[in-house]
Image (cartoon, rainbow, N blue to C red; front, side):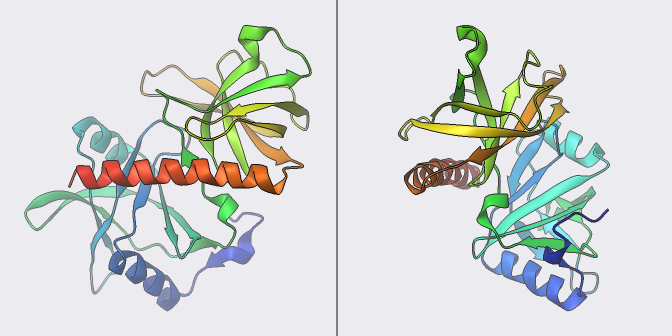
Length: 242
């Protein structure tokens, strides 16, 4: 199904192959996840099958994560190439690469090359999350604090366990964004949509996608610093497993 940003769609086989070859050559980190489920792994392209163009990918260290990814009807592939987000969907199957377990993913017939950095979302660790505190309109203290599920330069998703924001699409909330290791900023968020996700606990919860409202340059820099911090931590964890 095509999206509104189809101007970013790449469907020429040679161009797709060139992009995938570049990701492999640069050993770019790849995120494999099941959208709206807490199942994800950071991977790399190990090799590309010459005839078919199919991708050999690192699998997860945890067997249960591999099981969920292999069972998923659709897995999202995301990576950045020269600060451009590469994204497509497909299915994974188990295989071997150099006598070690790996994933096999068919070369996509099309992919998105999103030329705006804001499209790339980074998941926020649940143990020490960034949080958004609603200040206006006033809310009861304990209910005004929402953990951030993931964040990008263009917006973020809030975890809304009590479904307090579910009927407020289009509404703007003014509040405080606390990002561990980075300065706290005041920011406005416009609610775009809501969705249900299923964490590993199995209990569904609501997330609320928001776009920043009237975000100044200094605040944009702070958010980019936090995103960079998360990406560096993600890379460090990935290399530690190798």
